[in-house]
Image 1 (cartoon, rainbow, N blue to C red):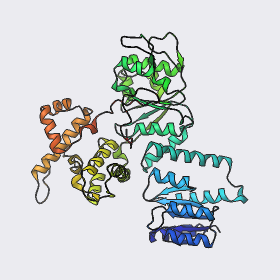
Image 2 (cartoon, rainbow, N blue to C red):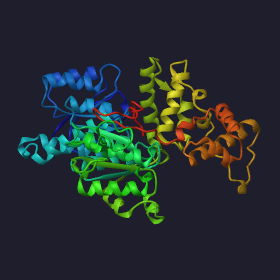
Image 3 (cartoon, rainbow, N blue to C red):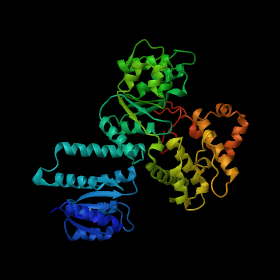
Image 4 (cartoon, helix red, strand yellow):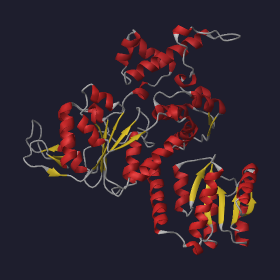
Length: 493
């Protein structure tokens, strides 16, 4: 019978795991602390240990580090409710076999345990080359997700992770779709980091932020004298990103003429700088992204069908935050740690009232809006946990008004009319800003009010209009004149 050591400071978890693993024919020993587990591991040899990561006396990672010094043959599987790619990478880098997040299915756990025991049993042939390769690829994916700062454990995000792991090793062009603020650039970075090109440059440009002539010179470069003001030679981003990856964000906003030039570059893998007589071969992986419906754009003649099929060899769709609500608390805590560290504040938690409000809100600006809300809350907070009143009113007043055709029901008891009207007003302003990509002039026209009046209401209601804007020009390259640096250390785009 395989010997299993269970380590967790939650008695209920220990009891459930003990029952499941004993029913699976295993010899189970359990303990409730890392120190106790360390003593048991010194006394006897276990085939496998399943340990919680976050424990009060000795963390699971610390237990793993110390145990590997005197019982390296024991396999470790880590479990935790505090899921983050940083923790996953740390555990795996210290020798953990696998990593599961609570809550998990018992079938998932037993499958991981059986697979680990099978691969470690020399009577069954040890670890096959295929399994060893899969393990190496899995570790590379964890590291890629960590470096690109992707956070999420929902089933839809796990599907995205699996796709990244599957396609990263190839060189196919990838199209990433999703609403503004869902994290398309993060996924592009993860693909690059998990690929064989990760030692090469990753270059990012927002195609919708440049006029056609400037975009062409940015992408393809120019020679001296190509146009007025071209006083030297400038390499284009396709050339700068050679041996690496280029990320063409908002590719759906390109003009038809520019689409033709991009299509030719993708087909021939050659570019011609402005003013040059000869073409230059380029070795670069192209990753494109858009928040537009390109199929609809094809139908109305705004996007070339042949270019679509050239860039959409592999399509990855990033779900909006409202479709993965289970990630909200995880993301909120991630941003809390990030901005608390940046500001030097000792804020370690979010109050239950504030968290309930965060989880109830629909997040039209997606992860970017959530990040802005937490950054603001950290800046304003004076206690050791985020309070409800620190959240923007657009988040705190999160109930959408009832459609006029259905009437507005009066709640039982009393009704705060001013608060309710502010809630309705906030909802309409947010929708107008979302519809106009944060353009306050156009939003004011939709709402039939002056721009000054809209600005006043935005200030009073504590709405962040930048949440609804498309990303500013963001061009990154090694040894290249950048338009803008990476705008967020958390990197949500």
